[in-house]
Image (spheres, rainbow, N blue to C red):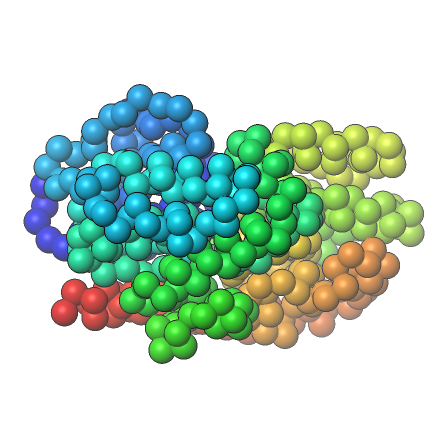
Length: 436
């Protein structure tokens, strides 16, 4: 095993056969920092995978899955050369559930039991633990920090607290982790549950050494939850700009059809149902509009409901669901306008990539969307207003030359602000500060 400092990345619901923002972030992180070793601890509802997937970066020493709700057979670390940490032997961890979790019936069953499972596992020892959220991943990070005297960093890609509000009030929420049946019971205890979620976030923020939101939009929420301002560092997602064989300024709007596209996992938080309503309204006005949806099916029931809605509106030939592809830029080549109908976001990679590609954009104003577009695209606050969406999309279609003229400046802005080099330097600085 290559010697050197080890960083333990703690994630939730990470799948290596389906792209998502966390997977892209991890790939960019470990590939841009080859001087560090990483282990990945993934909290999941499925059983532990027996082997590390093929094509893992050389500096990822191990990947382990921790099934926090399902039953499973205990297995050791994949890499026997790693030192183990046994949290069950740490007295302090027995206190955490009592401190954080409301004593109401379902809260105790759902949160307390889950945290107890986390405390019963074997983990790889690391010099720094880096949690991808302030929730259960963050709590595990705190337990590992206290057991090993390691440092702890938390990156908030989406606000854990905000997403629980959406979940509890039956708003739009992704199925990144398939929650057990207990979740429906937890919803009976909305206020105690929000208290528990607030406690978890505040606990994590106060125990960590650095808090690294990916967007300015998260900072007010984090501070409201008690995050010490001196610990907060905004680090934007970085991306690898592709080599360009296709320049959209030379090709978009060259046909009679106006091709409107979106790219992302198909689940309720991505707002595909709103896209369908907007498509119907635009197609009623003009037959030239067509919509293209690219992305893996994350919520099959939601996908089928969307397909049924399209059929009921008799616009099957105008909304096309494409097979999943790992190459977003091939999808962008089939679009004249990129749209993002999401109800909640952090700093979405699809928006960074499509903006860098050079597509005119209309996006709901959530999370860090304005920070990505910075005036080069159209943001929508009234993202449940179908008429408003149609008006803004028509504005681009009817003033296409104006938007095409922005493409080169838009591309330069995005590639400079969200460069992988900037991301690499900032993350390297954080790690080296903690190692010193």
